[in-house]
Image 1: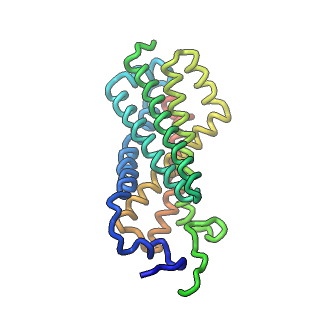
Image 2 (image 1 turned 180 degrees about the vertical axis):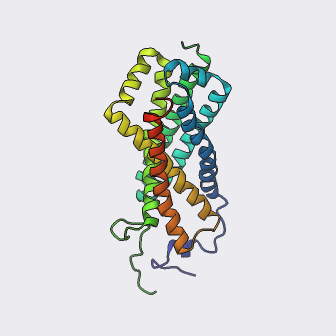
Length: 131
Length: 132
């Protein structure tokens, strides 16, 4: 069967079977969003209910396992969710393939680099003996 | 079907009429981009300021309570609640529910009302609450 230019993208792939991938991104975005629902509310509530927001109080808060662990998770899951979300935006608005690849790579580097920086800072607070 | 026509693109500002449903979609995206770039930058910067020392932290705190700093923080609070509430709405529609026109529109309006109310509640507590 020959399909002319009038065929829709859907029409062109119909019958070819599943690519066996592609669902992960969508699922990951949802699963991380549920995690961030908890972690985001945890961050806002913690900041609101800490007695003070001076540096000493924050260091004590982040050094306790109840502060360090959720914060580490928030960083990892937050940057991952941001990356997945930005990919949807880029894929929607950047139509030319080379540019799309460039933008997605830029955001990948920003997300991995930013996440690593944030974890490094948290690690310094928790393990680095900062006073 | 013989001729190839220009097919409609997905949500497009010049074609779509403003309404609560599409506005919720647009603001979900705008708030998401804001949180991804500005929100995570502020979070990372804040952690570095805490790690670096008292002077760095005071510099950050001074900037945070300046007019521009407050606009950014209040904006991020709003973006967080808007994205959170319309995110919950998205998760509900992902299950196949809430596609009836009335409830779908009502829930879109509720995300805007909820985000503004929650943002106001947080900042009223910050400025006038027990911890102030």
